[in-house]
Length: 358
Image 1 (cartoon, rainbow, N blue to C red):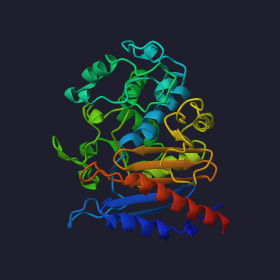
Image 2: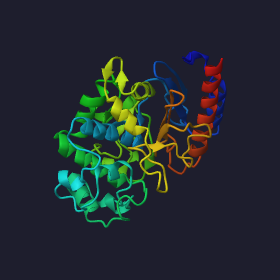
Image 3: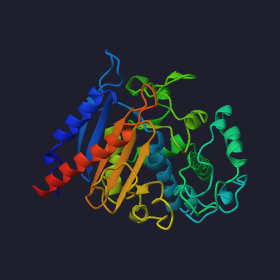
Image 4: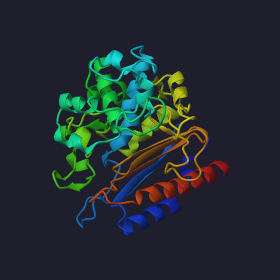
């Protein structure tokens, strides 16, 4: 078993300090995680302002689409465990007003539903009823199951489905089923409702909303009052470490079986190997085009968030990497995050492999 403290992260720290110096990102939180230990690091500031607060272990990040895997996918899998639904269940069986006959839960989870990837006209609408109507009136982009096309709207629908199945709002359900069992005390939707604004790392300065801080950046989730299947979750490196450790321990966290062993086994399967991109349930699975570096293993999970967040879980190495930035601050026109992710993963996985050898 590896001693995580032998993992030499100096090169990673030097590299990330250099990209902070170049003003590619204001700051960063990251961690290397094993099934029973972790090594975390906090660099830089919340913003580029001279009087900015520094990044620390309490810094709360808008996870953006990492919400899809930490919360929404996990809740869907738990619904399967509890016998409420199966991967082959048609969405229309649960959401009676859903217009598409052949879309299943599996299609939503693997982004193979054909539901429109994005359409900026959603910005005219607010609230579940009008957003739902907007999505349901659109034609499918392709026949379900024939292509992988990442769809925010597909995961918005998945959020509606989970709410209908359980009779609970996503925030209450995630807190009950995931965050409390994992002791994730600083993971939440709508942090402003809990007086957590000061801890929130700001995202974009927008024309219509000004500086976004303490509220979800994603426009769809914002129009659903911060409670959506596609985005809305805020968290810290230390809380996400607990989630990653649970997955690495076959669903177990400190003696509590949060996910079943059978469910974690499902996550190791690629469901789209005959299609254009490799996806498992919610996650990317060892997909070469994803920015997780060059040393990823044959059995690994990965997901990014638009705000500059990502989580990597490597079953072969028994490790994970959490990388949290606010790369869209002050504006979203920042292409550097792809190389930052790739290089950071390369440096950390090399350090981990070396520590394992020593």
